[in-house]
Length: 197
Image 1 (cartoon, rainbow, N blue to C red):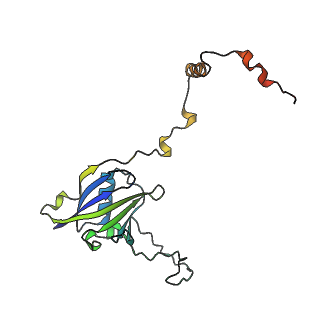
Image 2: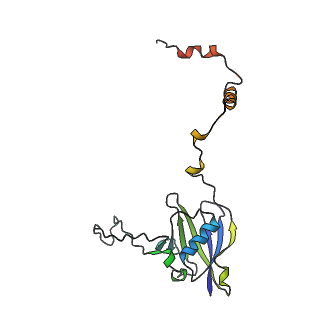
Image 3: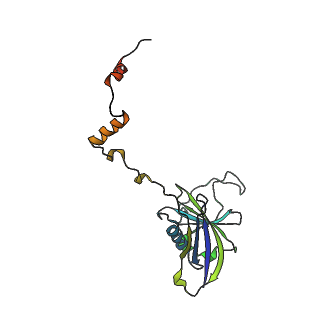
């Protein structure tokens, strides 16, 4: 039985690397789960793989869910080469139905993994080796990790100002700090007067 050894890069973090291994007859959904586990993603966002040529141009897309629309709409007609066409010419597949071996056509196959389209993260994956194994139960697995993703605060992590309570002593100490232990009321006596110019 054959397995693939991939190296994963993330441009936004210097020296970020993951080496992962997965069976050739496993599907892209398993690959997706392996990646979000070893990278440290939450795993609850939309994701997609793109099979790329050596220059990272997308050739095929493999999505977590079927995004095709069953309903038929009247689409405007475009010429094949029309630059204003909104229709994608990239074939789309679903992860759970797509085996890795059916999409690997290059000894250094390039794959792009895009995660969370609201706060996009793009990982670049390159096939390193195709090897044989007699122990398929060992896969999928991560064999090497370097660097971590930066921690990003979400709206849920930021406390609501209304929930923050300051007791009277904290409030007094903040005022003392601001006015260096006290203030002279006469210094502020002219603030409420209206001056004529």
